[in-house]
Amino acid sequence: MPKNENEWKTCLTPEQYAILRKKGTEPAFTGKLLKNKETGIYICAGCGAELFSSGTKFDSGTGWPSFYDVMNNDNIEKKTDKTFGMNRVEVLCKKCGSHLGHVFEDGPAPTGMRYCINSAALNFRKK
Image (cartoon, rainbow, N blue to C red; front, top):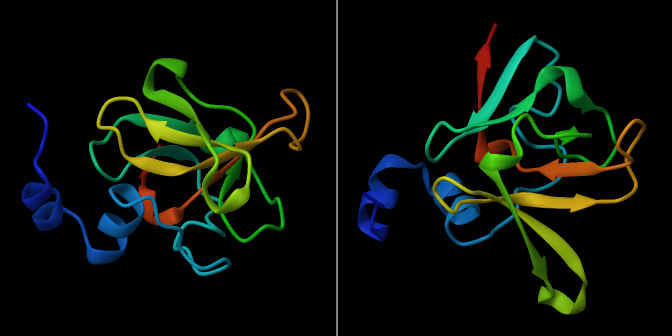
């Protein structure tokens, strides 16, 4: 059963709520997972859906954790985002609808994609 906004507020930190539920962005170079180099899986901070593998994480220099591919396309939703006069593609968790970040077509091989994701939108599960 989907959570209502009061339930989201009680299970997320204020920063997570602002990002996941209100489509905010954490300041660049401040996220807890930006420099994480451990092996494991990045999961949605809202619902625990598996989103990204540490094997696809790379240093994009942008200030947010970046990945060149998703673990499972069934857990990711993409939507056009024209806020702030920009034309971007928003990345959401398909399971809970939480905002994760954006995806750009300027990433490394083999996909050429850069999933630019807020640390606060993720939790990390070590392997």
